[in-house]
Length: 471
Image (cartoon, rainbow, N blue to C red):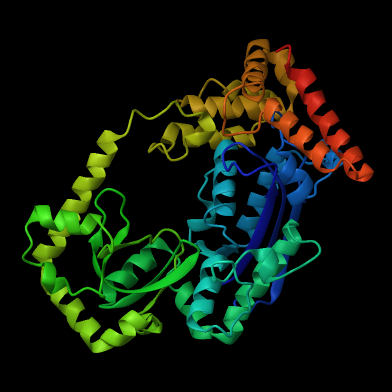
């Protein structure tokens, strides 16, 4: 199956509110031969205040590029989507992409009135090079050299794994990410192929159900750990896999009453491990867990015997599932009412677009800009009307102003409220940016070139401020 390695650079760290400024993607075959590529940039999205550190220090995107790139943020996602679809079914990879890049792309499509799950539906799968390179290092320390943290743990940041002068550029980071994947492929092909076989949720679920003992890798407190586990079932609320840690003999817990069992399940060392089958995690045959001295001492035969006892006691497994469900529901009930979410934050609010809105989205993208404006009040879900209005404002502000002054005014006021907010928001406000500028001026007071660049960023945001301060 072909693979797509990708990376993107954005105006800040928020997956919901910041905008993509650059994206690079490379299509390769299953032996890493290059087949095609896509490289796109966009100007700053209308109404977005950039995070200074992100654009100046991390992405190194100039104020001129933010202002004058010909492609809009909306057009960039359409171009990227068209290219990805032309590549057919593929496995999408990035470095820490499950937690960031794929989330950004998903929400970017969502806000653009497109089907958001492009990289993990219709035969596509998602992988994360960060996950597999960590596992490769744990299984065979010779596969890759890493720097070591003060606590003695390997460091897996991309720019330390593959040092480059142009790190944090979308193309450079994509190529570095691809080279890490290729490294695992060349040095431990069995590990690489095992990972590819469990990338989809369905294949991961089938694996944990079919393997009496399997190895799960978990990253926490700056360290990767191996667990030899056996499948219990799936979380009744969140659908995650749940597995018993075979360092503990399940037979020792069979006769506990529900109250005592609930206590055992809630305090460390927790006997039940969560297997996030939708997060492109590494799942391996049970023998791989023997790299961990705890399981090596127990021995594979004893681990299998414990797994047999667990699998034969369906009642015990169901008791665990019921207790964990009860605990999850208790926590949900203790939570305060869900805060008022902004439209950009509602992708996971539990409601998919209904058939009418899906049809309208398709028609919206086929229509002329004059016709697109007429869609703004037609969607059943207000969030889609919101997105349509902002798209029309970003792409054809002049046309929106002349054809619907009320919608034009509404969008400008919405942007104004956001960027001038004096609260601690999930996006960068004008106030946030001004503080960032002041801090940077103090930091670079003896570097004239940096100070000049700071003034250019400042002028950019001042122009945005002037446009919306009277809205």
